[in-house]
Length: 165
Image (cartoon, rainbow, N blue to C red):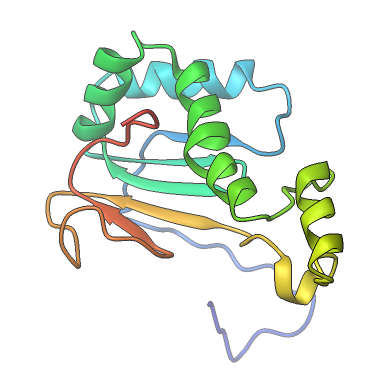
């Protein structure tokens, strides 16, 4: 937060920032048209000039050492960033949430879940109880905070994320 005590409402403040790092950032949200974002990210990622990268793919934010992610994308996905991003969103996170009975944003509850709720007289419509997390954070670095592949939010691991294992 920036606080400037002598400013009055409506004043413009100009900032000059030094020593700030830039890095590749892939921002795909709610399955919008992603071709430009993927092309820009792929170009920056393949330039191999950055130690870190960030990806926001649907409800997932990944903060990763670039070399670990490069290995996964290059060797497991033949540099297909779009397929990699789709599998992170759909297989790695979305399927786990659906299996847990969460309804993903923009989707309807699966008939099998609705039937089970009715059978057991469960309240599965209450968003206070059954809302999927807004953002799942994944950190990928050399030293996982709580060991290798620790679960929760955030999720922490020491190797490149591979949605299929």
